Length: 169
Image 1 (cartoon, rainbow, N blue to C red):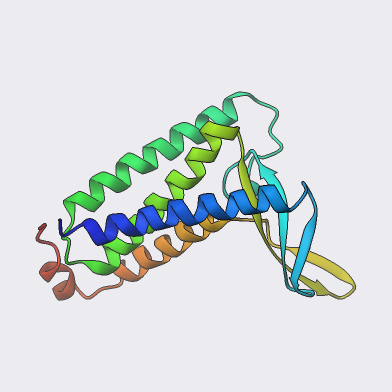
Image 2 (spheres, helix red, strand yellow):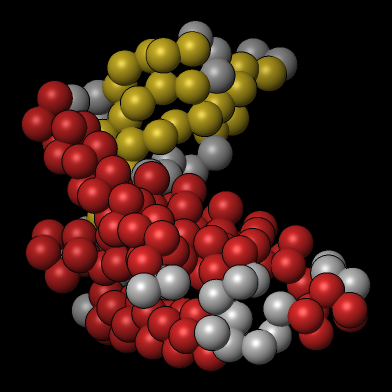
């Protein structure tokens, strides 16, 4: 019961991710964009058949989606096992793990259901007459990145803080 708030974080990420992807898919045509902050941020509608930030999206092998699904399922089991083996009182670690879990599940649902992931957040800069785009991403990707950042912060804890929070509840 003490883990319920953390599980709710994962569920919130999954729900927000699904809702935003649905909104983009139903309101923005494929490859169209809606500028929110000119020369910095826009919503786009793209399909990502690769890994995070489009890595491997142009691969012509049928094994790439299979490997991505196996990898995501592996992440799911590792994160769940680690989350339940660590103390419920270690909030930073638990929040980070559950953000990763929610993001992994959100993207995995798309991969199984659609064969691709809907990406729509596009950050870019116009610099020196050229436009430089960060690869498009989504809520699930954001949750995973924030979760990883929280895990790094957790690793920087002092040894005495880590000892006090290492007793599972």
